[in-house]
Image 1 (cartoon, rainbow, N blue to C red):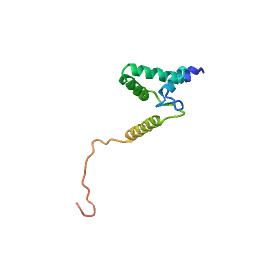
Image 2: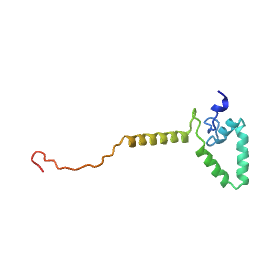
Image 3: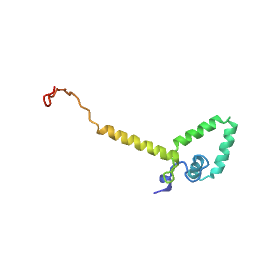
Image 4: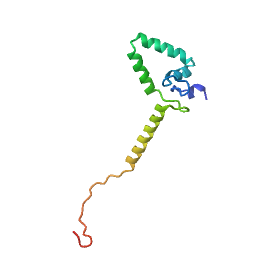
Length: 111
């Protein structure tokens, strides 16, 4: 199979300064991550900080962590996904009773 079929855009677990976004983009496009970081800082300064920070936070949330080297956010996402799956499987195994009648049963002479 070709390399492009296995290539995914993920946050880098090894080449990171904050969350590994530019390390992952650099690995994906085969560009030095430091060049991307410098360009990002310059663009953020010239646009007034807020849009650049918001875009970075969105990229951290959207880009999955490197599966070979997950960071804290990747571990938390996998933990929450496993909790959601186990909760859904518990809901599927639960049965709902319908048309149930309640009857009084006398035990040992008590009513």
